[in-house]
Length: 279
Image (tube, rainbow, N blue to C red; front, side, top):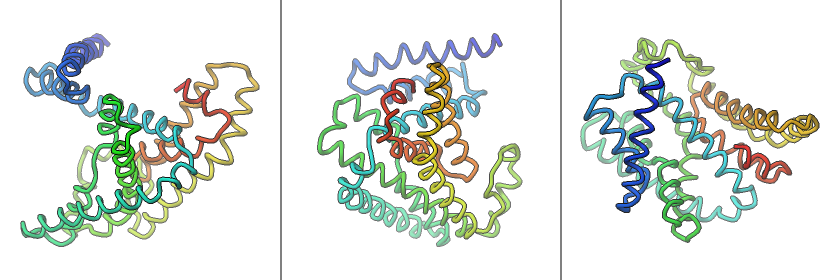
């Protein structure tokens, strides 16, 4: 227990020192966190052995953030931005994928690897970009809305990408994941499924989140509200987000994307403001 306290103290101290300094220099909090991590990890070696555990814990913060982002939208808002979403987002993903494929092909990689590399390089970090836009007050500007449309299209494009990539598996690499000791303790519903079945499970999981969030969440929250216990409502909100993240994880999808979809579905709920306040 003492070791965990010391490690947590080091992380928090680095953040307290580096992030305000980065903000004062106009660099943004994200760069401050990155610099702090490099200093306490690679440079000084104060932390680093527990990186895998901390990474999973930190990723949940991204899940919560995208759930709240989804709560700020609703299906009507998404439909209103469909031209920007499909136009800017689709063009960015297609052009960047094509550029990545061209470079990979020029380097002499196999065509399956070329396609995978192109798809990977077409994506970016939604969490980092949204955080930077919010800090600089650009999220409500025309450019900010355009950037959000691109990020949202990327997150949606992850679904077909993850369905396609298993079909591109090269035979000599197919057994690498199974022999990797780091993957033996995980739980996955799609680990040994053929590509077409993997795609069906992914589509079914996303459909479950959307339909379940729309039809089942309201009766659940009404039942919880009748108890009159605020902490139970908070626990229900956390249960919802964690459950969706777990579902997305076991089908090899992004938990953050699932939380975002759930947030969009619940954006018109009468419990929206209470959910935002509790989260």
